Every structure is written in structure tokens, then in C-alpha cells.
Image (cartoon, rainbow, N blue to C red):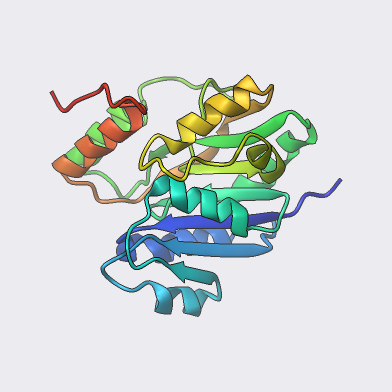
Length: 228
């Protein structure tokens, strides 16, 4: 059965990187039926850029938070599969084409790739990010494996599975993906991590932003991880 797919890009002040992200999605070797950009209250308007690329654009004047935007993205999409890509990440050209075959197994609800720095990111903060956030020192091998949690920096989700377990929690401002992943696994769904699928980070982090990002990734819903 052929599965349809749309792409959703949550954005917040990503004017410098969004063009590259949209280009990488437009250049996928597998066709994508719809592309949405949901602007969560950016200071600089992204509408003109989105109009140039011919993608669907919706802006919220006040920030709604990560859980709300992802919940809304699922609701707005009309396809079987929904690709989430952060507005600071590029995808390898064959990302979608290589990920979709995993969904031949009905129990698969999500397929994620590994994340790495783009080759242009060579500063000290990016190197720290690569090692401590992206775990670049580990050998992930080449075999796809079941993952214990969900990430959404570059991930395809089966919409029906997400809706069946209640969609993203719109009240969460972080850890919304991990919380949804817990519900998916508890309901018998599988999350696949495929190291052959690559997401490239092109965000220019500062020391503060990379520490905030580390806290957001590893703090959990209970916010047990602190800067200390």
C-alpha cells in the first residue's frame, strides 16, 4: 500500500536556517504532498520566505509551545505519514525514501534518523554539541533498531497511531516527543531508529543555547536535570 506523506516544520526565530531546511525537504527523492511551516511567534516574519517556496504557512503571534505546535501539525496534516523536521536541521536527500519502507510493518509508529553536525559547523560549541548531545563518539552501526524513546528533530510519524494514543500533549513546552513516545510504546507500537538516515544540524548555537538545549533534551518532563 502506498502511503502519502506531508512535512511539518515548527519554527521560532529560524530566519537564518529555514531556507536551507526547506530546500532539503523540497529536494527529497520521494515526493512530499504537503509542506507546512508553523511559526510559533517569531520576531522576524517567515511568511515571505515560505511564499517563495510555495509552502503552507501559519503564524501564531504569541508562542504556543512545542507540544501545541506538534499537536496542531498532526491535526492539520491530511496524509498517512507526517515528517517532522526542526527548522534548524537539514535532511539527506534520500531520507524519506529510505524511511518509508519501515512503515510496511503496521506496528511501526515512528522512524527517526541519527543527528550530526553539518560539515560547516566547526566551532567549539558545535563540537561540544556533537559529542554531548549528538553522541558522535558512539558507533551506532548500520542496522535499524527499536528505540526506547521518541525524538522529533527529524522523524516520520504514522498519523493514525499518534491520534490513537491521544496526539502530542499540547500543554508541554518540552519533552513532548518523549512523552508521546512513552504512550506509543505502552500501546504496542514500535519506534525505529535507523542510523542510515541522517539529519544535519545547521544551527549556530551559543554556550547558553546549547546548555538550554541539553537541559531540554535530557531534563525530562519532571525537569530533574539542572544547569548545575
